[in-house]
Length: 320
Image (tube, rainbow, N blue to C red; front, side):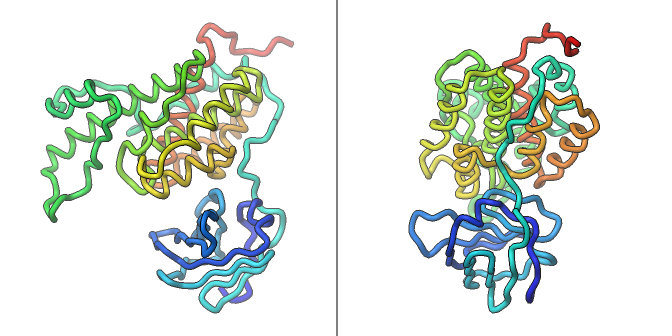
């Protein structure tokens, strides 16, 4: 990475001044840098081809980082394990811009926002695990264990794992629809009912919450949702406790509480209400390539919010 130019990065990084930390976690296509300064945000190093995320930057090439590597960002100059690079250009804005648009277009756009196969649409689950099903419905704040995680070195039987996954899909769909309706109705927003549900470094429930928040922010900009609802939603996300979900999931939700989202999600939300069907479709495809399931879960959250807030009988054409 010697003397490389970095052109894809979160624009907010330019305001940091000086940042020092060390690589704490390394994933297949990313690495997390924990800051030396207590309370500062972690930095995300991304391999080429990965979308920009809050406090993230994309390296030009394969990601060569190891746990313990020192990282320093001073102004535009980045140093990682003895190599250096420079941030070039203005970077990416991960906020949802106040673009003009029309609410009348949203009902027709909902079809393009349908979650892909494997998304969290409600579907029957005839083989649900009875005990878990009973506990879920009598303890609405219970978190479901990640179905692919082994205990004591023993992986769950594939059939049992499939049953838990189907139950989890149904639970996520039900709670997502309820939370979206709460936003539309002005009821208290309770993100803890979704946060932490599901598998992965950012659980499906967290991804759906991020999509829901992005949809709420865009609808507010279009005049389809009161600004106070967005403020309440952001405050509820910011108040989630550290143990509610995974560290990366909590970090993503904290960024959403400040109006910052992964670049593909922010881009898709900005397409809502605009008469640009090709751009909308391209944004949907781009979002669905984010992670193994994260993009589809974010799409499901955004679509649920739009579906709850926009009456189905609204005209699908703008009046000239």
